[in-house]
Amino acid sequence: MTLQNTEIADRFEELADLLEIEGANPFRVRAYRNAAQLVRGQTRAMADRIEAGEDLTELPGIGDDLADKIAEMVAKGDLELLQEVRGRTPPALVEIMHLKGLGPKRVKALHEALDVDSLEDLRQAAEAGRIRELEGFGEKTEASILRHIEQRQGEEKRTGLARAEALAAPLVEALGAVEGVEQVEIAGSYRRCKETVGDIDILVRAAADSPVMQAFVGFEAVAEVVSQGDTRSTVILRSGLQVDLRRVDTAAFGAALVYFTGSRAHNIAIRRIANGKGYKINEYGVFEDDERIAGETEAGVYGTIDLAWIPPELRENRGEVDAAREGRLPELVTLDDIRGDLHCHTDATDGRHGLAEMAEAAAGRGYDYLAITDHSRRVSMANGLDPERLARQIDAIDALNDELDGITLLKGIEVDILEDGSLDLPDAILERLDLRVCAVHYGQDRSREQQTTRILKAMDNPLFNILAHPTGRLLNKRGPYPLDLQAVLEGAAERGCFVELNANPNRLDLDDDGCMQARELGLKVPVSTDAHQAGHLDFMRFGINQARRGWLEAADVLNTLSLKDLVSALAR
Image (cartoon, rainbow, N blue to C red; front, side):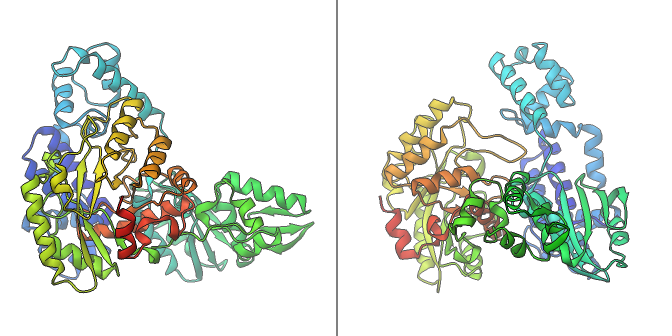
């Protein structure tokens, strides 16, 4: 069994989580997390690198031990050390650790004191009132745990878009190489760029005698073949993700793409228009009586009912049909519109690369500017900067800018918003910066009113520029903290500051509704990656996907501005 990069990264992440619960050396845990990030971000398969005889230790952060473990996973399909750790520490504890308010130390205490080995064990302990008896917990914590268990159990199991992409990409590549296949497209919520997907729908335009179905069910990452037919097959990948494949004739391919891209509400809306014109739209085409009058292309399908082609990201029945009819569809922002990134970290705190490496990576992506925004001192676990260290970094950025050609590093900080609404560093040092990205990392359990008041108070400081990851959510791990987002967006617009769309695919925070709210207020949205290594700058495309779902045009995005105009926009 040859593991994909995503599967190797998953194993490193699980190993890090389990070792953290055990209380292992934090540097060892961090090494496995860094290895997971690096492997997940590689475009070439680790198996291909090993087969080519490449030295994996030449990859940044990969020493002999990690290289050996990657080679072991490629050769054996698993990791002996991970199996050993799983034997000592139940893997289900990882899910518990990701509940809001719980971390590795508390999970370990619950496991050792109450024999909690699963989410169900934890629920029973909470309902029996046993958790409140443990030192450091109490009734409020117990009630919070029970509430978050109920939320988690009520959630539909979905896969993050970036993870779905990594799992689907090798399959799409393999299908495209099959004889008789002319086109391969992923449809569904994946094509609409939703932040999570339930499953994957793939359409292929192929000859009837193409062996594409046999290739599909025989793909190496398939764990189970649910069904197999001449025009449709369904499999479950080793990751647990379900994938459906449909073979479609050329004459109907556009109609099938519209139909299977969805959303259901969007499809119902366009079918109603078609019915009003005496047509019928389905996955096989647009029909007048029994005659197919369109279906080969999506544009043809929309055109028959007098609509402009609608970008997939907008197909949620949130006004896009009327906009297409009236010629009001937005000219959505694209990756090419982005002039720079306003949120990234270096090895001065919890990033992997230094100033020069991050500058080089940004220049390689055609950017005009990159803001260096390492953590402030409140985030001690990330070695956050105090005023003295920040002052030294400011001087280092100034010196490096004298040497750089074609790109400018902006002096910034990701400064914590403290519980009382003040900022973590003195104004005297913050004034020396080009911008301040302000964030809530602690005290996320406050009430909606308290959290909103806290953030608005911080925005009153004229040095506040951008609110980072505004709701604090982590997809599939942690929900948003209570917040009146509309009030925060209005407050930012009134004060001349901004609210970030964090492009990290585990965050994507703002969500698409928040982007639409900002657009209605005339509030420009910075789309930033929160990069912790050079490769993370590529997260920008996930942020652009989200911005497009929120109807944002280039003029609605802060970092489409030139450096001169950006500096002017940041001046409050």
